[in-house]
Image (cartoon, rainbow, N blue to C red; front, side):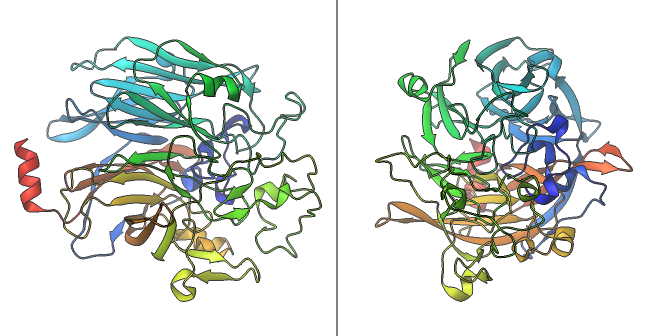
Length: 493
């Protein structure tokens, strides 16, 4: 996890990550801090505070039947945003006591059906089980009936903030499948045995993968066996540390943003294709994980990629590891989308260790600067934005920027907490995408998710603590330049 996110993990377990961020650590969302006011970096973008939201807000979603917005909190609450006396307000619909998911990190709608996913604690909080449920939402906000999509068998939790859990959900464009990400339970593939309770446990069949389930799946039990899960057709893609957010573009391509660990690897964006392996734990951000080398002796004094302040270093998770698993034979890793800049493309030079800017050197980065924790990935699938943005993507950087820039000596964290415009470019020769990345709004406070309604983007913040007490964040409305003709047609539809 990011250093700034390592201070808060609940019960020593999990987190979000997309971030390298454990959810329990949603970065400075857990620290006393002033609320910042985002500001646009272009004159044609408008920023407004839409409403205050409850603490620990993680997912923001739209019911496509009613058009209403809902959001969820990490501790299991589901809220419906309704209009009362002309003002938007939160109405609590469900809690963890209803659905049984005590670490709720994933939410998505298919028509009027709400899917929720996350983890539950077992074995006296020493173990995990993944869980997904569904609800058919009622128009009057009465408590809906629940059915179970899946539970997993028990597997080891750990005492770190790197236990990312089950999180991002996305519905396939044809509505036939629900995709779900399960992140790593390690920082970089090291043993995490939870005090010896789960001996020699690294990552599992049930982690570091994106899964696909038929939309009507019910009462599944997922076992910790990769071959069995593949035989059942549930594993879609492998080798992704933590795809905390996923999104389809207009053409039906699935993209995911992932975070790397406490080493200065760049943070990946992947074009996710069925059957592909994306390299974790052997490769992150296009750079090899040094712990796989049997003779590696980590030392922050000689290795500029390894900070002496990194949580994983302080906890001795970086170490000589001759038993590190070997790369899978015959498997070619699919690289990340390459960032062409002009933003989020700073990187540490592999030979000198100096932080460089790809705009100056001409080097592409796979994909975003280290420790940026990308999330809230979204595309203009309705193609209603102005020509410059039409059909393009957007992503938030949860970390970096603000106080982190002055408090942390790592120059890779200088910018962040911002909204990035992503212009995707297909490279036929590489059979992959490149992306032009540009900052358009900055100065958020722990942004976690976003939705796009016409040319209005709504961005929700995790919240934090004020005087030691949990405080909610803000839901911001960002009005982007639109295509008047396309917007008028959309409203008539």
